[in-house]
Length: 282
Image (cartoon, rainbow, N blue to C red):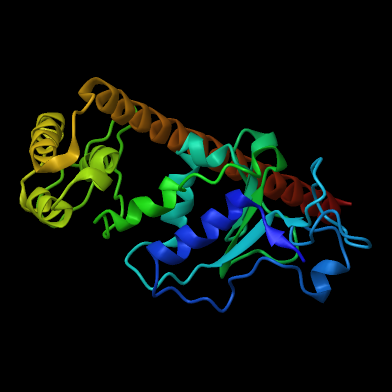
């Protein structure tokens, strides 16, 4: 009997725990007849006649792909979760590629966004392909569970031409400062006795880019007093900085890929125009 790898089983459950109201019509993992007729990550390895995409050294029949319906029934979109996953190295390392909404992001391609050329453009669900080297990595998928830490409005990130996050966060207007705050709180979430009250207080505060770090550290001190235990504020600060840089680099890569695609389309249009002109002058 086939099973999901431990890594993807945890992802499957983290999706459902984080978005319990999401549509599940297009959730899936084990290959149907169409998948079984071709090589697919939805087909289990170590199974006679099965055309698995990847395999490993054990003899367990494992499936290394899951589909998640994109209708999350939340203010969070699937693209927001995918973007966060692409900026979370600890989650991304467990995958080979992600397909969603006409694009594919591949480990072998440096996780740059590429146009997906397959028949199914995955407009209504996302496909996550597991890396067999990390089958047993069953840690929490924090890029998914981040969105149940009270950050229900998502991450509205504005950057200037230098790649700096510029949009301030005020009450009711989520931004990168809010993402930083929730990331810091996530470090101690499980140890805080009254986490919901703490987060409510955080959301009622007036954050700006200049005061974010000070505010976070003050909240962390409150969390410690509430039962969170001792905190390594230097490590938390470093993690916030690393997330900022990873997100900036991701957005820069996406911009480069989009410009390259526009240039390619422009060249195709020019070539077509030249061909028509040449034909008309013949």
